[in-house]
Image (cartoon, rainbow, N blue to C red; front, side):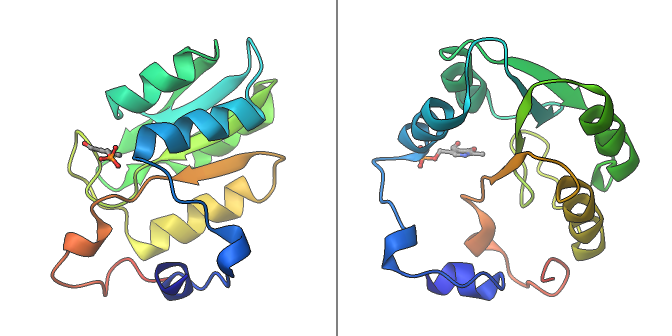
Length: 140
Ligand SMILES: Cc1ncc(COP(=O)(O)O)c(C=O)c1O
């Protein structure tokens, strides 16, 4: 709850589900949102174990084009506008695996503005975020 509060998201204990690792989390999200043939937008490249879990639910993937700052908002907008059955957007915005890239606050805002226009859920995978020395560049 404290971690979410630093992101400006108010949560209570009812919003928190402790899992035995990220893969159980991916599995629960996929179970809730994915039916055969649904699509998930991912960064290119992205974390293999997440793809493997989502694949078990027969999701297909759309690679979102990236530049040195991360996913390109206009490209994401184009994907979400034109593709049917996109249920999830999966991103690792801090110390992305495998690229190591961290998305700036400005780019995060632009991406959220796009995502909020559509009926789609963003999964933010942030296992390494607390390892940073400074957080000035990513706080919204
Ligand atoms: C992006 C990303 N998410 C999640 C994990 C794994 O997290 P957990 O140890 O909770 O399964 C890793 C580990 O490499 C990772 O790189």
